[in-house]
Length: 66
Image (cartoon, rainbow, N blue to C red; front, side, top):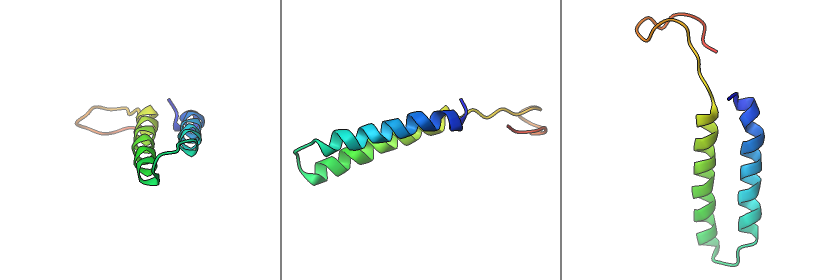
C-alpha cells in the first residue's frame, strides 16, 4: 500500500490514542507509557504498510525503484 493511502489510517489511529487516553483517570505516567507503546505500534504498522518494488535481481540491484 502507498504510504499516502496509509496516512489517513495512521492519523485516525493516532487520534484514537489521544481520545482514549484523554478519558483515562489513572496516573499521567501510566498514560504516557500507554501512549508511547500505542504510538510505537502505530508507527510500525504505518511503515510496514509501504511497499517497495524493484526491477533486476537481488545481486544486481539495477533498475528503477518505486
